[in-house]
Length: 66
Picture 1 (cartoon, rainbow, N blue to C red):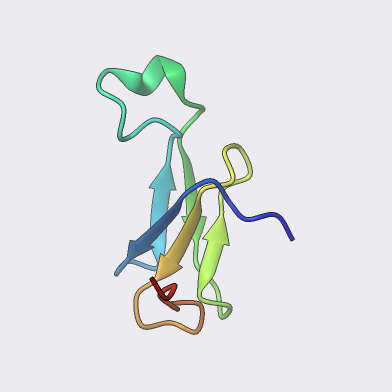
Picture 2: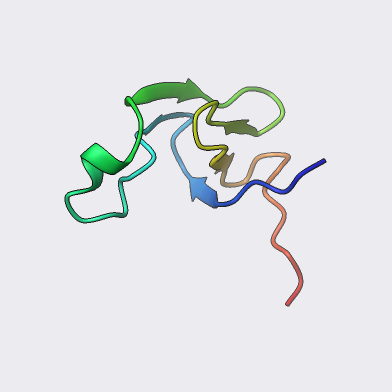
């Protein structure tokens, strides 16, 4: 399995991804905004940019040991 480029922890089970939300004026640099639903696995990955959204407290919410 390939590790996703970015993991975002969230309290909301429904999230939006546009691929450029962290880039100032980045709407033109991202992808179309899509709404994603986190399921029983506790995470969902964006089909455009592979960003992974993890539900805080869910089964996939495992912090990596530093």
